[in-house]
Image 1 (cartoon, rainbow, N blue to C red):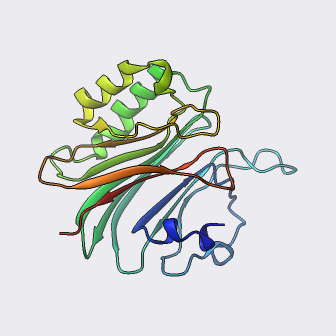
Image 2 (image 1 turned 180 degrees about the vertical axis):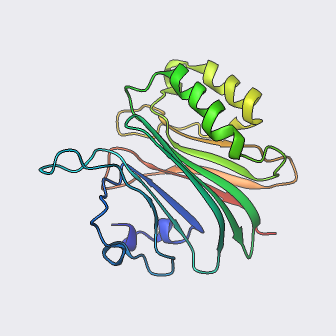
Amino acid sequence: MIKSDPNILDADVIGIAESRLISTDENDDFHVPGFEPPVRLDQKQTNFNTRPPHGLVLYYRNDCILHNTVTFSTPSLEFVIADIISPSKGLFQVVFVYKAPNCKLQQLKDTFLANLLPDVYLRHPKIIIMGDFNIDLNTGNTSFLKFMRDSFCCSQIVSKPTTSYGTLLDLIFLNFDSKVNFETDVLDSYWSDHKVIYVAIETQ
């Protein structure tokens, strides 16, 4: 599916939530042309008749350099932090997040403060924190936006519904200043009830 989507293949970095991969899955089976082997955060398979419901996958383009990664995983919350150098966009720090619906908002905040904040360089000019937060901004939940501004100096930029049901669950938080030009949008996907969200940074 990803291999045939030109919008996705045009990216420098791709993050996929709810990958449902397990340790016995071979990277060769999930190779994407033009990208390095995926960075995977597989969930443990507790029932051998079914795959685990979550998991994260990160792809980065061949001409990018992966400087460092940090991972965090529980049954209800997971994220991957990656420091990536792009030849056209420079160094940026990206965090891909998946929060299960049963993860309480306070639990998310507490975990971010304890396990994410220590590895995010708040003075870095290009921080991207994005993923499936399962927090519907169309029904309010503005307290989390304030939390991200106060704790990570990041503002949320997605304004359109990100699912087939009209909810806004998939979010992108940035700390970019006015000197960094970017654009964002939501694209339809044919393989999920979640749409594709992206942020494009202007070439240096």
